Amino acid sequence: MADKQIQRYIDKFIRYLEIEREASPHTVTNYKRDLKEFQAFLGDREVEKIDYLLIRQFLAHLRERKLSRASIARCLSALRSFFRFLTKEGLFKHNPLAGMSTPKKEKKLPVFMQEKEVAKLVEAPGDDAVGLRDKAILETLYSTGMRVSELVGMDTDACDFIGGVIKVYGKGKKERLAPIGEKAIKAIRNYVDATTKMRQDKKKVLFLNNRKGRLTDRSVRRIVDRYIHKTSLQEKISPHTLRHSFATHLLNRGADLRVVQELLGHANLSTTQIYTHVTTDRLKDVYQKAHPRA
Image (cartoon, rainbow, N blue to C red):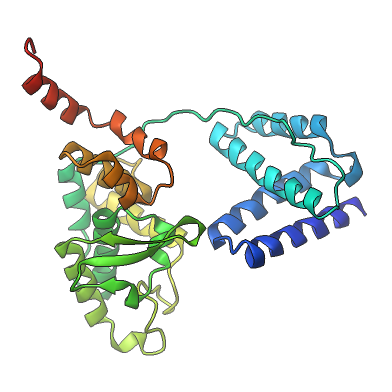
């Protein structure tokens, strides 16, 4: 009974996210997963018995499972939104998370590639239809710094090749225009031209899978893994590494931090500032030129 009740609450909350909040599919998926985790932890406990202490026990359970601070913080954020919604709807008298602080995240320096490594990776795909698609994907990720979720959601009409920009729908369905380089434009054009016949009923979707459907985030991860293995590059590279490399290379070449913030689609400058910690080559160069006793 308790399990059915919490499931009804979760279903109501997810509908609220999708319809009223118009949350992105990525956000909805993450919230579903985190709330399922909490539901499994509850077991047969009565929903009315959920309190501050039980939430603390759940967080301890997550720590015992060796989840990262970032994962625990994300799960706690999902619970905050969930119980805020239940309280607002009158389904809960008191929010059990009221006053609970969020654990500090570890400050991990982002992994990035050297410019030569990026060049090696994006040149790895072949000249067949799949190779042209994969090259276009790699070039676009590095040229724009967009997230994988933004890339797989792209349609053909999002590309303004004459203006050299791409319309990107980011987190919270926020829209921005991202500049795109000539090499990425050429790669996309080559791919679209080579797949004109197969996209008759899928004209809008830019990057197609083998079944002529839209690629998923996981599919892009497998594509990147394939070329990492082919080029014998470091194994810690992921699609997000190309985003890190995009930001780092711009800053190393003197780009303004606030401009990079806009290009990445970050809401806060503090999110972008982590990239300043990895641009040591740029810092040393400026130091050597500017300090009188360097």
